[in-house]
Image (cartoon, rainbow, N blue to C red):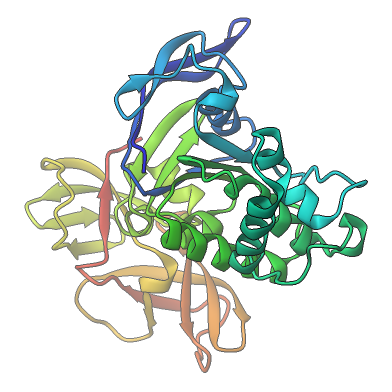
Length: 345
């Protein structure tokens, strides 16, 4: 297993910094997700780790040693791409065993390793099939097996599930996570999908404009975002300005008590709470904000509310049998343990 450290890693294209002084440590055996919108620098970072792209400045270290001068094929890292790039003229077995043949391994040992890999990716007995005979999910499994057969120290995955339908993506996420846990191989997964990152990763590096905004365990992006921008990326648009005084936040829509340690001093703050944590009520209660219902949508197991709170749009999820309707004044209960404070933008 291999540790990876990125030190002040920078890549410029002309005057544009695609990756801007990035610092990151990845523990041995971890699966990390680089998450962010298109063009944020996540794939550029992955390519520098793989050795497919040289940084403008900074360093990449494997187990404490710089690999900048080490060719891609000698870094001990393999990369699985969005497009599987299988050889159409070869069988599945020959595709998977290609890397071992290039290393001069005996054909009997290659055949044994191919069978082992096919078992690992849940395609036993597929050795003699051709790429065109496989589904998209099966082709991506073969590409994964081809990378893993050489027993790399690091596995790099560049949005490998982007071209699959929803059901296949879910199936492949589970497979990748199970394989990574079984092999304990240090892995980096690039994605723009929040759900994918949260499901797969031990930690997530959220990137905007070549800079890591937050590097954390998945649940903290929901419960403890560092900025409003991070919260928005994880589908939380519920914000109201207030003034923190001890454990109380005074807002124009009501006073809220919080118990979470947000690390902010008394003064102006931005209060936030996720839609699923809010209780929509029609009677007064403590720790509430005044709101007006803009619209409701019945979602089967719950009702989704669009609300106006102090002139800003909020969302909340209420019970399926909710009776409040458009134009009604309601009360929003905010749980003290689930309410969070951010610095004012």
